[in-house]
Image (cartoon, rainbow, N blue to C red; front, side, top):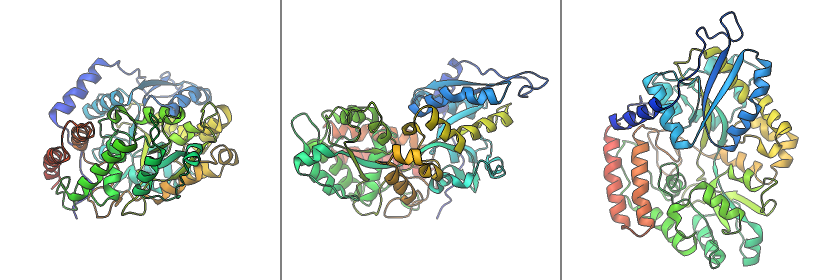
Length: 453
């Protein structure tokens, strides 16, 4: 089988676009000598991060770190996900050194580590007994490592689960098993569809991290995948056609109106407002559905992601903190990264912001904290169970030459996934046929596959 490790190579167009965005961004503020509070002056750590609730909580709590480390200031540069990816990619690829700490996904981490773009955190983590790196969930650690070296630490991790409104199911006389099949869920969704209320909400918005996040897991449990073990594209297979047709049919019969405009936030709102009865998506959504201000708090039930031919079909994702190799403040940056992903930080979030806000899916010990167990009783056990059960090395029926579930860990996948997602979205919106969409996607995937051979 070909190696699962490959250096990252960018297409000229993609890198040029990213470099243009970086050129329009503000420059980093750095000390000349990198000494925190030492003779040379203070240090400002520039942290590029994504605009989500957990990262906003970290920004709110950073003062605790700064008080304990006089002379160090952490400057958060918060961006939307697409802007973050472009800015950080441009910075590390060009070695501009704009950021001292970056927030990156499980998709990028092993590739960038192999390229030498990130500081190897293996020794700093292993040598710090208080940090307890072994406490990090093993599937998450595997996904952000390359060749036995860990290049990031997870701020939070997630899989995907099925979420449903128990009151709506009871009213319709519908029951679901804890490990449902997709056919079971599709049948239930038909019974739950009432006028403008969707039986199930699913992502349809184009994008490799939007539509293809859940759809790839459907394809895998139906027996398909992007490539075989020799990097031959298999998108035009009967298994792909069956999975994609099933997905569209379920949405046509029971889904939300205009699904191609729906992603995570739209489905979250639909469930909160009683406009949808079920939703299969990121496990982190459960904490938002059970938040104190959620109108469906206490009304939700949770199950494993539906399956067809596999035992599990949840994805695996983590938002991680990493240190670019270009930083002039490596010691301080690594220290902050450790603080923000430590057991003590998790307790700090619980005590100062709320236990339901604790970053999930990163550490096993989180799930042993009594206050968190109580606050997250509805969803924490199943989240931990699913995350420890998924297999990023072979999530589908057949072996694959990469590590990853809802993505292919090659640099070309961002472009291939985005273009193919648009093609599938056109099919969902009745603008093209399934054969035409999959045929064009096969050509795109095949060209990327050839580059791996």
